Image (cartoon, rainbow, N blue to C red; front, side, top):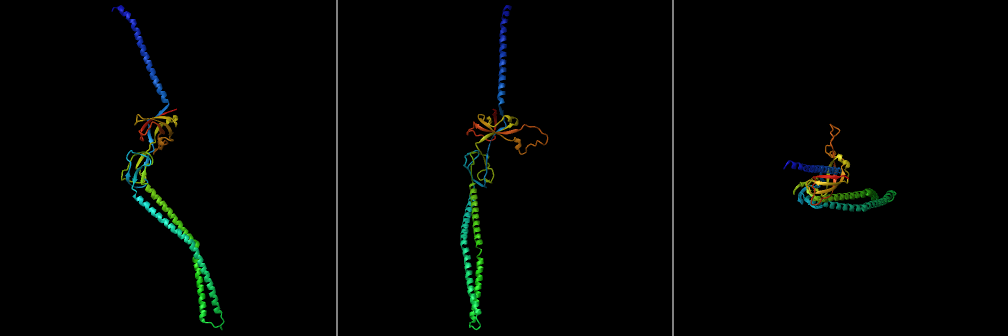
Length: 363
């Protein structure tokens, strides 16, 4: 190709380079616009959310403990078993408690019999004591009349004139009869005094009845307690849930208050510890989306239930004493309760203590 042909081709290459430069510039501008758009989208979407990875599943595990002591003779549950409310979980040896109940029943029967006897004695006392007093008074009246008659006869014998013929024997008999009548009157008067405490005798009988009634009440209470203790030998599920943290086996000897295992109920919520600087925009009722680390495909929704009135450090065993030593300001965490409103089913139970990441969507 000669020089003339090369000169003719140079003007044609210039537009090609210009178009390539324009395309590169256009692509650069488009890429920059895309980056700015994504950045703005992330920035605007992040304005309305608050999230934390300091969050865990929480609930109310029920500690199952016996109220009596004894050996476990029947165990119907095993680790992580689901039980329904009212299911019989275990049985404590009931033999000694059956004996205690039978003994209490016998004591109650004896107390009732003694009460019946005391009431019968009271009824008799209310009749017999007044009758005895009346009889004693009547006997005293008879003795007084006999003394009056004997004294008259004695006086007549002693007052006879000296010339009247009378035997010494008649006079002695009259004197003896008068003395006997006086003794009988004294005896009758003493009998009246002995039976005159009718009110006190009846009061004593009434007190005996009251004592027996109290004994019956006490025996009833003892029987009721023995029956309650016997019922404690059968331990049933207080709620539906999963058996966890089992610490006993068949034959274990248990004591009152000893935690044998725990029941984890279906009710589970999230306890999230948000920074104190994030609480300004966080209010009860806010919508929450929840990611569970253990189940990546599980998508839960919830809402903010409440905010604890105190940071977590306040309720520790040894809270910080900011008034002593050198103070270093640390951002505090405040527990926030989040209830689960959707996405949870019975096929995927949430164990307590799982790590979750809640995202609160601020209105």
